[in-house]
Structures are given as structure tokens and as C-alpha cells.
Length: 150
Image 1: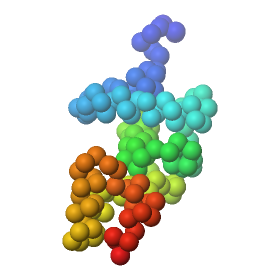
Image 2 (image 1 turned 135 degrees about the horizontal axis):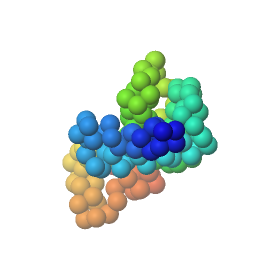
Image 3 (image 1 turned 180 degrees about the vertical axis):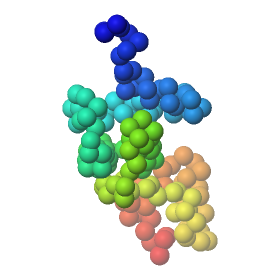
Image 4 (image 1 turned 45 degrees about the vertical axis):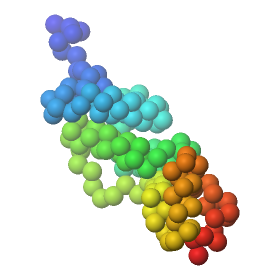
């Protein structure tokens, strides 16, 4: 029968959920992937599955916008990229060719690495600052501790 529910193609997000569940991804991965795919589709104002193509420039534009305007963490941008690659590779059967040269988010400096830079009294002061709950990185950036790191 034309127009019956069984003949309709499942919605894209329902397909994403189904494939993620078949491959035993966690519910958190499922929710995150769905959220990023929805944001991606809204960002590009996509109305049909045909609007998903071409993937590389669309993904590049979205990831760049996240880095520049969204102020997301590097891990968030990485997670988003994987959700979108999953969408194209597993659901659209489209192998991604080459690299996606989006603007990448800089990784944060690890405080433990900064504490290990000085030695002696300077390292003790840095450890005390960090251990007592004072924020070490603002002090380093302000220049008040630069003499200790020389």
C-alpha cells in the first residue's frame, strides 16, 4: 500500500540510533552523536539527505565554526568530527577521502607540566599555589610568576 508506514524510509536520526545500538555503542555516545548531528544539520539548514553532500566542505565549515565561534574544547571538536564521520561512513556509505582541514582548537596546557618546569623554591611555590586551590595558570599568565620560571 502506498503511504503505509512500512514503506517509508526511516528518519535519519532513527537510523543513526539503530546503527549505534547494533554496534553496541554506549547510550552516552548515542546521545552525543545525535546532538552533534542535529547541530550540524541545523548549522547548514539542511532539508533533505541530499543536502548532506558534499561532506568535506560541510564538515570543515562546521568544525571551524565550533573552534572559532563556539569556543569548544579540543576533545569536543574531536568528538564532533567522529560523530559526523560516523554519519557519512556508516549511514551514507560514503568513505571520507583525504583530510578535513578545519581550524583546530588548541589543546589546553596541563598544569602538572607547568609545575614541573621550575625547580627548588619556585616549584614549591607553584605546588603550594595549586594544592591550596589557587589557580596556577592565571598567575603564570599575569607575569607575576615569570621570574620563577626563568
